[in-house]
Length: 79
Image (tube, rainbow, N blue to C red; front, top):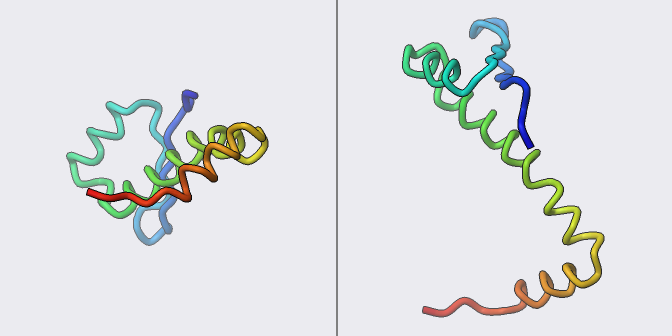
């Protein structure tokens, strides 16, 4: 999935919401200190969550995938 723009919601007292049209614009604003690291982190989490939502739904609705997920969840990790 591709996003047409990148939005970073912020309170008005911190400059209000930002909308960028490219990753290069986002990078430039961040390097200039115009985007706080926590604002960037929160936005990144939101966009990653949107990207993996179809995968999450697949494992919830597909019986074979759900069974595989349940099996993997039941396994213990050892070193």
